[in-house]
Image (cartoon, rainbow over the protein chains, first blue to last red):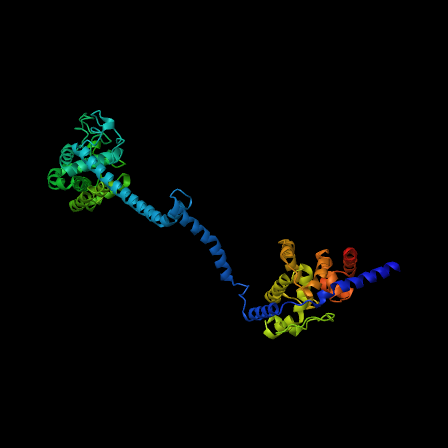
Length: 337
Length: 187
């Protein structure tokens, strides 16, 4: 009870003590100033706090991009070795580098194409020169400088390997002139070039082409030789300059084969390799008409299988392709007009 | 404009009507002027009790209303009077002023003026002996005349918490009153 009375007395004393606070008032100027500021602020529309989608993206982009640009600009202006300068230079030169790379790639492609064409041209010229003697390139090849032609094409001959190599060599030689004449003369006796081949000077034609004959191998060799044996001279003289000696030989050979089959026995009875007088199964090695049964049938009716006209046409085509590609195109067209 | 000084109890708490809140959020000048006329003296006296400095109380009172205007869009009616919201804003601003050491700084340069200000000095000195929370409760209870429940509603405290703050504040003020009486006797 006494405590409560003291507390009530204290409360009353406090009220009396704080009474001046109850009557305190701000200065009139301060109140007017505060009211005017509030009214003025209430008439001003605040900036929208909710920004749109693009505004936020713009803000983020500016926050990220502007510092980078500032750093790059400061780095480029202050020192060339700072981090900003290379970044700025890279950023500016990026397009130029890409363009340069593309141009370099283009130049490289062109250079590769030009180099390839130049190499092909040089190889073709060298191959033609190496084959000018009619012996292929075996005798002049640096890798095989034995002076003796060996079977199989040399490693660095761009003309071809093995049989193709020799044929092409003959073609190249014929295109030059001397090789074609030699090949034609070697086949002039109708025995192919086996009997005059320096590597196989047995005097007897043997199956399989000699290593240094540019006309062909095996059956093809003899057939071509037989074709060349008829009137290869004139044809070679006419067309050798244009590189068509082989084609001419094939065409004439086809005509000879047709004559050999005129008796209805095929060419077996007149073939120098099988001079038995009796047609035997299997076609002879130098008959261009065909083999075996087909050979005889074709031989009987093979007058139109090979005509001089066809041979001449094939010759012209073969010559036209020799200069461009010394490979098998001339051979193929020459063999089968 | 004339601001009539409060002469008595602050009166019953005014709970805002929904239309008033909408007008305030619409930044209508009339609504804000009415709010200023009604609450400015209360805010000023509370800040004067908190800071003990008239000029500072005037400046912070102006900031309170401007901050209320800026944040009226976020105001949500929770069944409390707007005065409670203004009181919280003023408490935060006064707290910022305390953290900057403003009370000690201004007490040194504040020269009491004769007249009514001289009678105000003992009250401000007594309030300076209390904590901010105790000052708030004492101001609402013994200056504005609110009941414990009303003080609890305005400050966001429980009635028990208000009683506890009031009890400690009275104990402290009793000591101050005894010392004041002793000084008067010694004179």
